[in-house]
Image 1 (tube, rainbow, N blue to C red):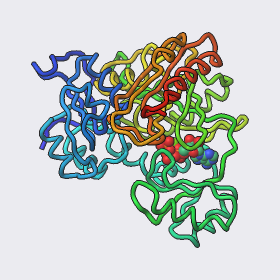
Image 2 (image 1 turned 90 degrees about the horizontal axis):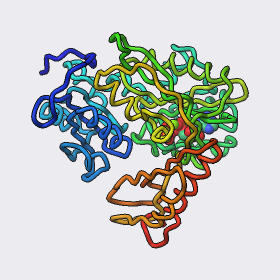
Image 3 (image 1 turned 180 degrees about the vertical axis):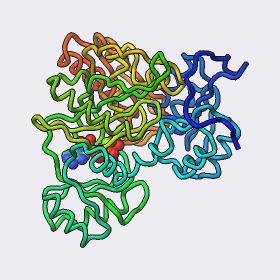
Image 4 (image 1 turned 30 degrees about the vertical axis):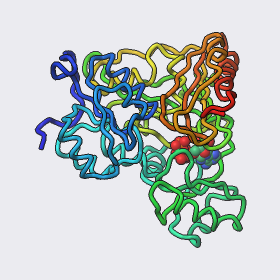
Length: 413
Ligand SMILES: Nc1ncnc2c1ncn2[C@@H]1O[C@H](COP(=O)(O)OP(=O)(O)OP(=O)(O)O)[C@@H](O)[C@H]1O
Ligand SMILES: [Mg+2]
C-alpha cells in the first residue's frame, strides 16, 4: 500500500525520466487524445507509461513504456499500478474498472481528476443529478426508467420527440431518437443492451432544438501561489451530422452574455467534481438559454481544435495541471477549426493518400493517429487549420480532411 497522500502536489522540481524519478504518468487508455497528453507531459519532463487493451495504440507509440491489458479487470489494473508506481493515474477512456480506481485512490494513489469524478461522469444519472439537482444548472427535461412501462411514463414527462440513452456509453452507443410511443420499446431495448454495460435503467431526455452545441473546456489547475483555480477556454463549437464528433471550431463567436452563462454552468459542475486537470463540459445553446448536457473528466475530442487555436492546447494545459505545475492565465484563442478523418472500411494497416494535396491547404496541420486498424467511422486522424476568420478555418480543415478521405483504395476510402 502506498503512503503517498491523495491529490496532485504543487511541484517546482523534477528529475529526469528513466535515469531518475521524473513525475510518472500512467495513461489508462492510449488513444489519440492520450497521445497528445503523453507528448505534452514528456515535453515537461515526465515519464509516461501508456496502457490500453490493444497493442500499438496511438499513445503507446510515443510513451516510454507500454502495457496491454483489459482495464475493466480490477486485479490487472491494480497489478499495473503497483508495478509502475505512477504519481498520477490518468484515465483516458471510460472502459475502466472505476470501482478499482476508487479503491486505489483511498489507498493514496492519485487519479485524475479524482476517482469519484471519473466514476460520476460515466454514469448519466449521477452526473445529471449532480448538475441539475445539486449544482442547479439548467438542462433539458429528463427522467429515468427501468423497463418499457416506466419508460412510457418518463417519455410523457419529458415529451415527444425524446432521446433514450444508455446509462454508460460514449459516441452515442445505445442512443435513439423516439418520435412517439410506438418507437419506445425498440429504443428502450437498444439503450438497455446497446450501452457499454447492459443496464435495465436508462435515461430519457427531451430533444433539445439547440442553435449551437459547444464544449466549455474548463481547467482546474494551480495558480502561481499554489492554490487551485478554475479557468475557461473560449467555448468550442461543434457539429455532428450523426451522434459522433465531426468538426469543431474556436472561438464559438457567441455573445458575452451567453459565454458568461456557459462559464457559470461549467464552473458549478466542475467545482463539485473537484481535482485538477481539464474537463470538457458539453452544453447546448438555445436562444438565450444554456443547457448542460454532460461532461468529460479529461480533454475532449472536440477540443482537438485547440492544437491550432491555442498557444497551449487542451492537452498542454491538462499535462501542466496534472503534473502539479502552475498555469497563470490561458491566452485567447485565434480562429481555428478541426475536421475529423474517418475510416470507411475494415482494414489492417490503413493507408493514407492525397497527403500532398491536404498539406498544401494553407494554415493546415495534419494529425494522423497511427491506429493499426481501420473500420467504418473510426477516427483515424484530424485536420486542424487556422484562418483569418472561422469560416476560412473551417473551409480549410474540411478541405484537407476530405482530401485524405477521398483517397481511393485506402483505409480511408
Ligand atoms: N437531449 C438532446 N437533444 C438534442 N440532441 C442531443 C441530446 N442529447 C444528445 N444529443 C446529441 O447527441 C450527441 C451525443 O450525445 P451524448 O453526448 O449524450 O452521448 P455520448 O454517448 O456521451 O456521446 P459522446 O461520447 O460523443 O459525447 C450530442 O453531442 C448531441 O449532438
Ligand atoms: Mg457527449
